[in-house]
Length: 428
Image 1 (cartoon, rainbow, N blue to C red):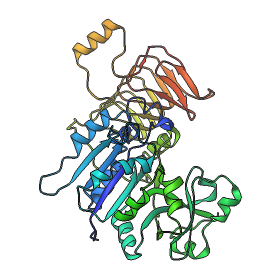
Image 2: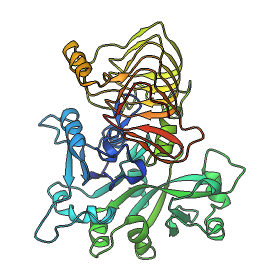
Image 3: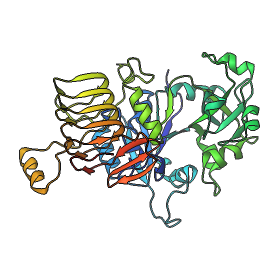
Image 4: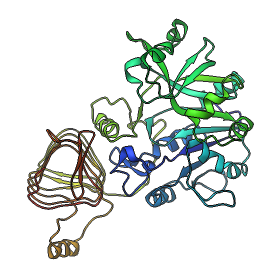
């Protein structure tokens, strides 16, 4: 399938990322490590590239340094293809000196940058979702239906739509109404799909379903400019409802794995799900690969370990450890006697040398990685953490909140922050 109209893609980098804090303490959401070796931003970018879309803008404003490094080190295009991934951070101009006020406001402020490239359509994407989509299909439907706006939608049971925008559609998939994050049960039931739409869906459900917005939009260029010629700040709350009855709005039905990983709990569960024998999201495919930074790391070394359902990132050194249902990131060092169960460990940004080990000993701090005889349950260990010997960490029976420097419990998951130092003998 060939895209018949020039397209530019716009990826929303998100705001402060408070729902993912403390993983976003020193980085923005798109830069958070994922699945042992990737970053969240690699997902929408890879979907674009695999769909033949190579002019991509990434809109960010908070803690962008590590994201800048990742993009610059990863997505380098030849001079003849015209492709790029361009980061557009909030900037002071003659018109404004404040931050992006929302998704629509962020796109509005950057329309002038998009105009430098020929395009008929604008594909707007979220930067904190895990899914695989061929955007050529939604674009093809957008053109066939002569739509002004097409919104990707996924059918979810009415019990699983909390926090999502819902739409009611006619049998031809044109959108009749759109409600952002409804809470009233009667409103939710009124938005349930009818028999004709149920028949279009390949999967069957015993529970009533609603069409939830995936935060993926295709706009005609002139329609987007017209829709943003105001002070509205958000697509879901204001722009889309404001276009109903005035423009041709259609839904695109997506059936496949899709997960919003914008919270610590969702991020944790999506990572661990990848360690299943047959995960819902498959990285192991030659078709439509997920791209990331080529680091040229050595193969992982495993010495006398018991490993049950795990992903182990490149360049790790694991000795006499017990690992069950875990994701272990790049350059991870696990020393003798480590016992991990339901743990997402993000790894490290660099290796330490013997000189570094001596300097660490002089400072009285642990080496990067996990020390001997440590036991962790239901935890996220962020990058380059230093954990001493005989440490036990678990959130079981403990309330959410700050525990001590570098350690917090969020959504029932214990999180060790990036670069945190956990002294030997610590028990949480």
